[in-house]
Each structure stands twice: as structure tokens, then as C-alpha cells.
Image 1 (cartoon, one colour):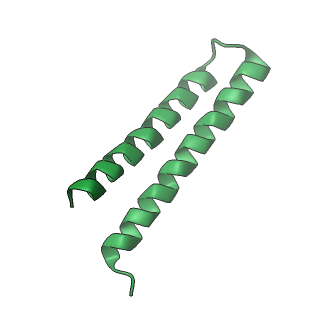
Image 2 (cartoon, rainbow, N blue to C red):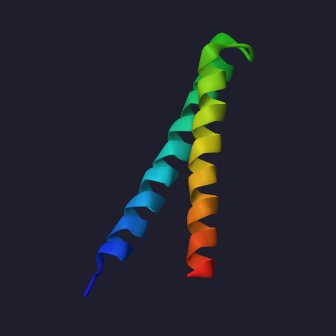
Image 3 (cartoon, one colour):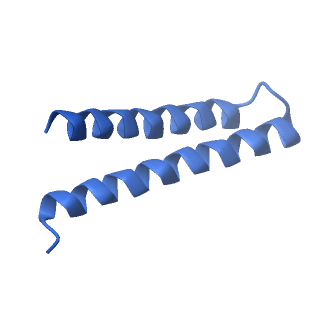
Length: 65
């Protein structure tokens, strides 16, 4: 049986992976369409950093628990 903690962990992982994927897509669009210096690229880096950070924290929490 799935516990609430497992559901939360799975949801966090999926949303974090989605954030990283969105960030990569934004970065590709920014570089191809507008060049390297654009607001879209800054947002892409922030999305990738936020998603990666969430994955890192979740992995550390899983190891400690």
C-alpha cells in the first residue's frame, strides 16, 4: 500500500523533472531564436537550477531517512 510520504516523494520528483525539462526547452528556444543574451535564457537557467535543487534535496532526504 502506498503511503502519503511515498506519494509526496513521487510527486516532488516528477514535478522537479518537469521543471528541468521546461528549463532545457526554454534554453534551446532562447539560443536558437533570440541569441544567447535573453530573458528567456535567464528563466531557463532558473528553472533548471530550481528543478535540480529540488531533486538534490529529495535525494539527500531519502538517504538520511
